Image 1 (cartoon, rainbow, N blue to C red):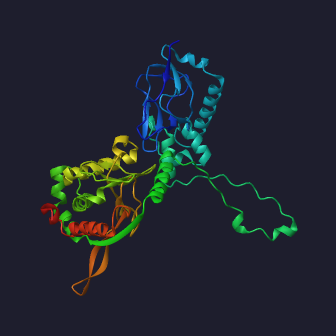
Image 2 (image 1 turned 90 degrees about the vertical axis):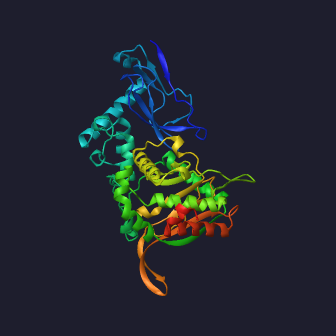
Image 3 (image 1 turned 180 degrees about the vertical axis):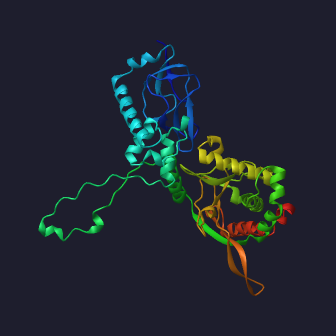
Length: 413
């Protein structure tokens, strides 16, 4: 027997521990070098961990949902073993494996074939396997699929509460119909959701957050997009959206008012000579903010392609730590969900964030006349410790001017 330890290397500079989400193999299973063994979730990404050797998975030391740290031994592989080596695994592990197999078999009869960890989660939440789209090998349902289904609004089949105890005659009149059918479901936060909560509280506790608002007439951008979107897509292989215009207008304003692109470090203000813009996008695991680096050097086509790439990766959970780290300014687009107005929270250690919203036809006054225009309400939240209201207001106005007259972006005025 030649035992190989399965560990994970350093996660990242800012990540000390992670959660083991889902084992792809069970004790006794044969494994091939570089075959995916399990999934790890940090507060930023989910990634696969491959097998360091071929052989037999002899023992699992940390189960699904366990907390892991770098260089911790998570499992052992017998590199010289054969499938019968599974009989040498600890009895407790065998019992757990049989239990998981039973749960998976139950899920199989109710819908798709569920991996053991997914079967456990299905049993805990009351979801039926037929409600979950499997993305694993041969359509198998993974734990991530169940979490995605929950995030996407799949309604669990909650167990019926036990019958209410019979009340004595004097108590019967106190029973309310509203209290007889009130199911609850307790689901632990994912690491990403817990990290989001931590950072939002940190932002509100450490920044002096104020917000300023403005409205922008999007007609010029809409006309420009409608005029060139077909030829743009043929030329660049990417669809011409609106976000690239917001990104370019933002960089235009940050050049004019560099403090909006700065950050606080203790009692120092760091002015960044580059523009790394975070674009908030939704994923099945929650809100993530991938970074467009050196966006001032990117063309409209490059921005559109990168945003599309990030959106696809976010949906699949394939964003890397590098793609989510850093950033000097952020843009949050609540408009994709129909938001009219919001006050976005600053993403530390940044000092400002732009919130854009749904563009709607609204009545406005032009030259003393009421006319209908496609209007978008802009919001900028900023850290008043280093950014004065004047700079925030003028910065937001510069974004507005660039969007209402896109020629300003070409002429840099």
